[in-house]
Amino acid sequence: MSEHPPVPPSRRVRKEPDERRDQILACARALFSRRPYGTVSNTEIAAAAGVSRGLLNHYFGTRRELYLAAVSEMMGVPPIPIPAFVEGASVRERVHQSIDAWLELLSRNQETWLTALDLTASGGDGELERILEEARERAVDHMTEVVGLTSLSREHAEVRSAFRGYSGLAEAATREWLKQGRLSRAQAHLLLEEVLLHLIERVVPGLAAAGAPGPADSPDSD
Image (cartoon, rainbow, N blue to C red):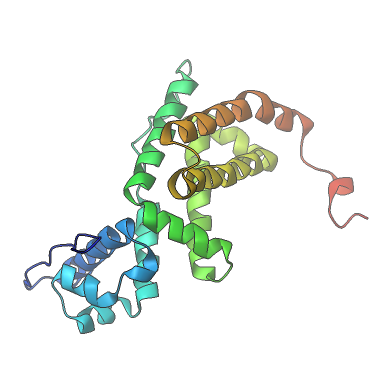
């Protein structure tokens, strides 16, 4: 018996090009989310989508192009909607809900996420790095909206930099949870929630008060 249950093949039905492309991408995401990138073939994806290998190659070319499309789509999926910041709302509750939604998304797509992180860490795929960098920027936008700091982050670049640093911690924490198994999901959630709240309550006010770095702080000032 195969270790990984196959995705049931779709019966071939004539569809519009966009529908066919979406079907191929959905089947690819399903396979990539459950198994490492290197173990999934284009032939298998084509069979699951109910299309010929030639048609799959027509839409996506190579397996790498299909994988990049799958990662891009995954990273473009918004978490559970968080209402716009309202004065007096509980920041902790909003942070808790937002982090929980993000961890749920990664849980459903863990192999795709981990492969993306591994390939980016190796420095071997500039296009994948671009996709993840855009996702990080959207994540910062989302975080600052959740906690009501959108305006402050626009006025103070150092505040936005702090949230970008937090994004790096979040990626490392998810690797510890999903790949290394040294953190449970609950522990990863606790770590991310408490660090983000500390960042909001203690670090961001200090950064904003200190102001932007001056010429003496420049790496080229020596």
